[in-house]
Image 1 (cartoon, rainbow, N blue to C red):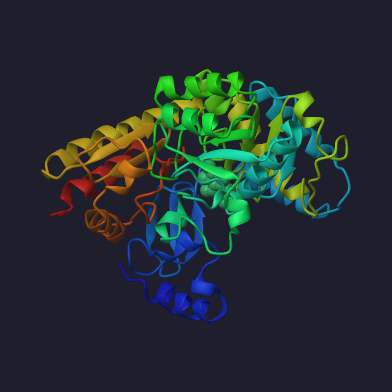
Image 2 (image 1 turned 180 degrees about the horizontal axis):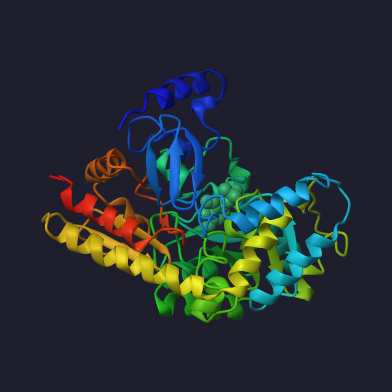
Length: 427
Ligand code: PLP
């Protein structure tokens, strides 16, 4: 494929934007080469500035679960935009989206909208600290909860891809309140709780992790975590920015059969516009301003365009829950096909899948935490990524990311993808 115009646009972007991108993972640092500039997209396909068509397995990193330029979402945005784009005053549509989200997600009474997943997680932790009167939090190595200071401690996703899981600029003062545990290792959590008795406000976790590839929680781990939190008066925060409205109507809580105390959302809830949210029961949310003392605010929070996109998206998912089954079946089909194709190559690999999240790791060890994910062979991954891209298949440009399937992908698209893997030389 030819990427002449993308390359020229990247060169120009680098003169005005640090690294030429507005979010580091887009720069292809982990896989080498140059990013592709998108012109437009429809359904499962991206069309780049050079006229290439790519089958998209990222879907804007998750939000576009029904594919690009999905008509009901587009129409909702267009209709709303004609009536004004921002008021900084309450609007009815905020309550409509809140009501729908609360009806879909188990165990929440109220929800507050913000502009990103980062803001959602940052505010959820502040709320947990305000509610419990404690300062420390436990997070898991390789989990990513956005780029606010407290979370850039052994973070996954772009942070690790970019080689800086601990970012300069995060003060020691902040870092000391974030304790690090090992995913799928209850004992590591237990030890931290014992060593910091009475000081931990919350444990925050991606209930199915997607930022060190897709990592599946073992049954005992996630239920054990709930029990540990209950025994020690610690709040359990599920960061469902990736899993919310993707794994099912009620997200990971519903699928895993477990209740969290505070939930964070992003991605799908905004239908492709910048929306995040955090939610809990009445008692916890009662601590939030203006009802309570924990401050949190936003000029564009609850923005009418963003709310209309979110409402159209969640309405589709709520009315057609078979979408989740369809997505799971498509992901399973891809999994089987990829396994068959990779088996023939005689190289070690693992495929992790949960619902419509899936990742391929070039290692012979099961991948169940950050350390095992980091053992993947990055040279093979680079060959795989670029080999696929050359044939018009757009995968996440890092081994530490999950693919996000969208329901516009057809079985023909999946089979075409599998065929490309079949023909790849990964030796
Ligand atoms: N939490 C999780 C689990 C995420 O995957 C992400 C982003 O990928 C975030 C939080 C941060 O969301 P945003 O990029 O919208 O700030």
